[in-house]
Image (cartoon, rainbow, N blue to C red; front, side, top):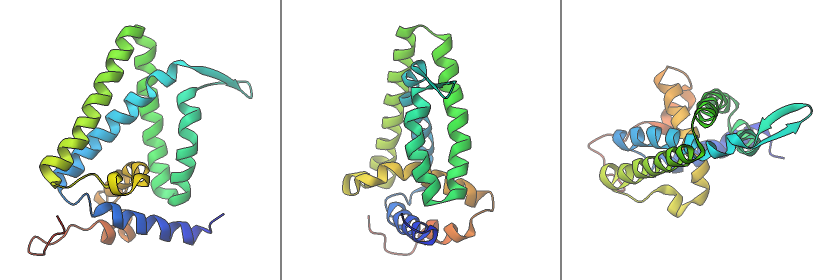
Length: 178
């Protein structure tokens, strides 16, 4: 298993690579919307499947989210904890929706959330960033989107100055690698 400083260094290198594909503020905003919609949509049908674990009923959404949550916590405990809080809220929203609507309506909401989430990502990259998504070149970046968004939030709130330099915008007079 990697040592904590090795994981922090790995995370910072991955984040530096990821940010090169996400410089435009509008693309970043589209990613916030898209990631929230995609997570909620993807977990919506999974919240309806339950298992008993150690005497507690747990949804399939929680079971499948745990490994990636552990990965995010290993990459960066602070950012991972922020994602955990967000994940609890989004899983609660998905569970509430799933418990209140018919199966047909749930699948309609699922399709809409996934469709709008994917559309937000595509528009962000095609219209604003004018560059292909990073996961085309680096499939592992699929898991970095939530970390990127949470890191940006922490920086905006005045936390995580160590990540601010990595995510700093490129000066407008510099030559961009678009």
